[in-house]
Structures are given as structure tokens and as C-alpha cells.
Length: 209
Length: 209
Image (spheres, each protein chain N blue to C red):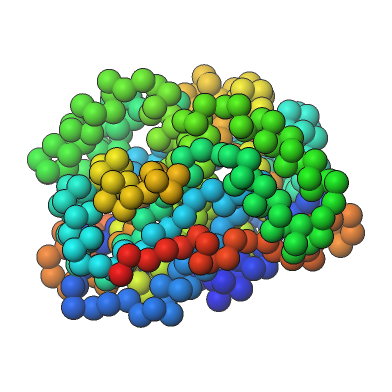
């Protein structure tokens, strides 16, 4: 079932600009993002959903002119926290305490986490946060496949310029990936119908039995 | 459907050591890893499946004594390439050419990629490879949920020691995450049945419409 969906999906190169993804499908894709597990439950990222045509055009211009950004109806921008801060971690503790009850175990765990994370260089913390965003990114494109929605996982863009366009740095965020959502066009996609190329499992997987 | 599976899963804290995950389920989880999309299709990681009890005990000892590593029947170790090399990239080109046909477009694309990647510091390339491994990691734990298999996404371990135990550096690999697989124990798991805590969607998601 999952395998079938993952074989159906591909990095769509040409989307049909006439077809928009319905909101309920976008909502379920975002639900998968929300449910993605993250290190210590910090969820250190946000998603910006861009549907505005002018803004999509600006994003396309700093993303090697990839047409899916404007042909797709929605662009999900995954943006990781630029750093861990006491305020951000304390907010996670407060929410967890409110929903599960406060405890010294809970507080102690996150106090130790702050003692580890806060002295680190922002770049180290950002890289860690970015990895968490990639978990959610993988789950979002999986969710899209379940909705019969095409998507194109993209790293090919200038993050600093995307951050400028969306004013992300002022919010303590840095863009890490884009995920245009839409529907594959029947013509004009060189990758549509191409054989999916993957390393053989015995080259990717080894056993220590 | 996917949402239901993602709500079912949780970072299992206590697994039943008497229950082993059947091989066909492990195989389908690994299939999701293989089908995960990666930047330029490089799939820059491997997975080591550890079932050997002595080796699992060694891993547990360098992973804060987390019992799931020995109570679960399988531990998936996600290990990213320590660097991009001409040889590794050329192998991807060769396989793609063999399966889809050779072309100057194909060769040119990867020559430009090598010109970008190969001069970069190994640490930059490793971080990039690690992010790709996280996509597959997220999809593996999603696949486990579809199989009714419990898993525990783990970053809490000493990567250098895991690399030593599995002799990964000699293979040009560095461990990034662990994913024990097994079945939740009915007793002894403080997290079992606890409310899943997630930031509200309106705090994680914003729109540019």
C-alpha cells in the first residue's frame, strides 16, 4: 500500500497550472508535517504555504526558474529555526506540562537539553533543526502521494534570497527545502513515465546478524 | 489513513523482547528507504540492519542504555556518506545511464554537480548527505507504522562510537540515526497512552496568499 504510493510519486517536472490542490488535501499533508517526530519533540521548524502568484514568481526567480513553483497551486516552504533559544524550548515544556501534566522529570530533561544546546554555535543548532525539518519534509511528500497530489522536493534554490522574499530571518527562520504541490501535466515532463532509478537494496543495506 | 497510522505510532520506550518483527515487514520498511527521494538521486547513505545480540548490546552501551536497542528485534542504523566523491557520483550516473539510457544531458548535469560538490569541505558534504538520510528515516518510521511495527527514532547516541562498533568509517560512512524496530510492551512504557503533544498547526504553518 505504502510502497505503491511511493512508486506512484516522482519529482514532478511539469505541473498543470490549471489544476489546484483542494484545501482539504493540503490540510492533510500539513497534518503529516505536524505529526512528524522530532528530536526531543521540539518541532524546530515552520512551514510557509505560498499561494500568492507574485510571491511564487519571486521564489521561482531564485530557484533556477523551476516552473513547478508557479505551475503548482501551493508551495510549501520548510524553514528551520535559526537557533535553539531558552524561550523556544520553554514553550515546548509549557505546552507539554499543560497537556500531560508538569513534573520534575519533564523540567529536568529540558533543563539538561538547554545546558547542551544553548552554548552551541547557532550554525550547529540550525543544522540540527534542519535535519528535523527533513523528517517532516519526507513525510509531507509521502502524505501528498496518499492524496494523489504531485509534489517536487526541491533544494535547488538560494536560501538567503528565499529568506529575504518571505522575511524569514526576522522570524528566526531559515529556509531549507521547497515542496511545490500540484498535478502532473500530461505533456512536457521528461521524467513522467521514466523508470525510477534506485540503488539495489543489497548495495544500500547490509546486515549484522 | 496516513494520519491514522501517524497517530498510532509513537517513540516506543519499552519494547517486548519476546516479539520479533517478521522479515517481510522489515523488507517493506527497507523498501520505503530505497524509494525515498534524495537530492539529485544520489541516495547518499546506507542502512545497517543489526540483529546480532552482542552487537546490539554494544550499541545500547553507547546510546544512553536505551533498552529498545536490545529489546527490539532489529536496529536500523542510518549512516550517511562521509563525503561526496567522483567515484560515488559516477556510479549513480552509470546506473542511471544503464536504466534510462545515456545522454549528454545526464552526464552534463552530474559533471556540474561534481564541480560544485567535490571542492567543498567533507563536513559540508556529510551534512548534506545526512539531511538526505533523514528523509529516508522519516519514511522508514512511517512505513513501520503501516506494518503495525513499533519504532523509536533515536539521535541519542555517540556517533563516533557507533561508527567504531560497526566499522563504518572504513566504508566512508558516518552514523546519523538509529531506528530500533519491535513491538510495544504492554507494561513499563511511560509514554504508551500519553497524549501526543504537537504544536498547534496555526503556530507551525503560515500562509502567503
